[in-house]
Image 1 (cartoon, rainbow, N blue to C red):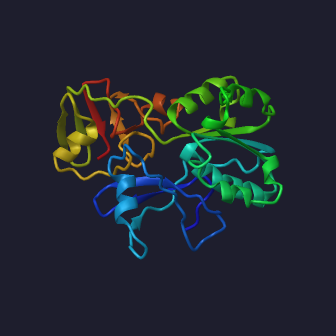
Image 2: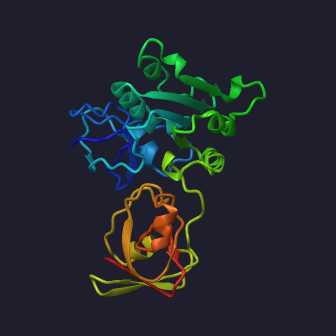
Length: 287
């Protein structure tokens, strides 16, 4: 199945979990998908399961590639900003930009040089690739800070800017790019920016199945539906991957996700049921 730079797939694990991972290989490859899974010390079971239980030869189910962080191939210049494992979707973008002969720059921050992923692969893109790359490590900075506002300020006015990394980096990036054209600024969250809506005390009515489910305090819509035995798609459970997007037919959602744009939030036509709640007494969902 073809994919484009910035895409991800959902990995269906034998323990029942579904986790989303960016594709890091060249989109011209049609025979394989390549992902990178960083072992997270605070893993909820996804990365630790992959590292400890998956072995060569195992067969896993994956979704079709989806792209919520697409590369604008026509851009004259692309600025790519990565923090830690946020390098993964940007690596496929760099491969594509190299194939197209487009200009790009990478600003890559990590805790230590040893913890930075893909330094060898980045160096192998071409002999003089170091001219395009600016790597920055916490333990080598000597008190300096990774200056996102300066990176944005120095970027050409026509450049497209991309950022993927931890939440504080993304928030700094969004603040620094506030005056740039919205269509030239692209972010991808790997983690939730705010807590899920668990205030409860509302109902969700399922239009297709004609059922009404109470969402009590302490639960998300997803929790309530699963407890009621209703099978729904979900993966990250943090509102960043888009797997659980569900149509809203009536009512006003309380949006808590990082997947939909502000414009899409304003239309109230869909909701991420893993993290978002309701501002109205009832939500009618297309389920």
